[in-house]
Length: 440
Image (cartoon, rainbow, N blue to C red; front, side):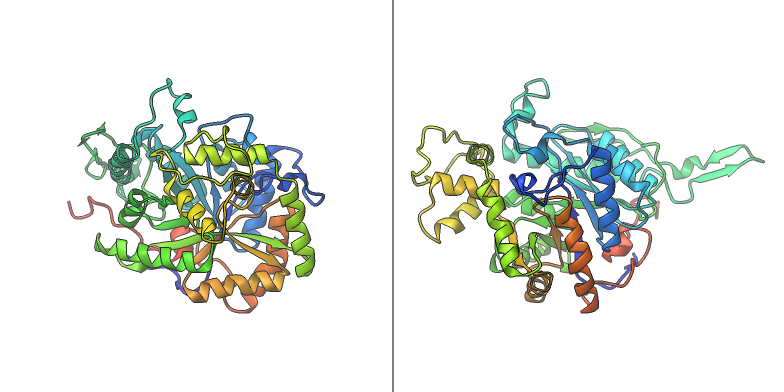
């Protein structure tokens, strides 16, 4: 197995939302809604690549309601969007979110593998198990499986996908006109998987990836999610609200990796960071206040209830938020709320506003120099191997980061001068996986 580029550079991911991550980001004066959805995605992908970002990341949800914020109501299929983005970029990695609960291993392996081919080896798969009961209503109204079953299925699901990605050896295609042999049958492999949840023969009709296999991305914060990420994750997105929390998470994650005989260098941990950039600190703070004052509390309450799996509508907004014990609640959100409680009384309205705003990610508010200093401090403290940058509004939130913050990081030696190579693995410095059939 080969290692590509040095790992001591700060890695940068870009988490895309058409109108920004903050639920009220689209309402501020600086925000501009793109003329078309294609233009929103094209501009973001091209701009992020111009800044030297390693990853263009698209989240996804299979549950859509009118109560969602603007940035979630126009959400195209990740594979379609990233396939288009692959044609206007050359280096940036393209990570698509796909659910292991509402898809099939064969389809995911083929779709992500196809994106990988179209992009020249730049694809990654962010695997999620889906927590929303609303999503279940879009799939024959079947009941959402409990978390333990969802993660059990995900464990088998990802093993099947990885097996299918090994369907073709690198030299399977002969295209020999004289002999009439297009492929060498001995180098095309049927998986023939039979397990508790899936039976999949294979192969998929997709050549072996230019990067060996697409990169596996994971973001679960629950105990089961961390265990899954520790076993198979190569790029870990983390929602942590502070430097200390991020340092603790990364340390615990590395310890969990050891249970599966993996080394810390086998995965890149990237906490989310929301930069609010102004010409100086005061302007950035005013921008932050402008967004927060525009938050629709009802929307924030919707987000809070959705992630807690609990109806809070009977509680007054000024009531103290009770501790939630519902099994449907996202464990990562419960941890964030506990940290907020440690700072003082947490009311329903305060929690709703928080979930309508930054939602538990690290915030850096200030001038470009201050934001760069903040990222460097996080990096040097061991909070992450890099950071998933989440602009609160668009397009200026991304444009300003690329125009003003990236050059500072590059000048100080924290970002490389150029991409290390054409594939996502090369640019992340990740090992190239060996086919399971290599020595067969």
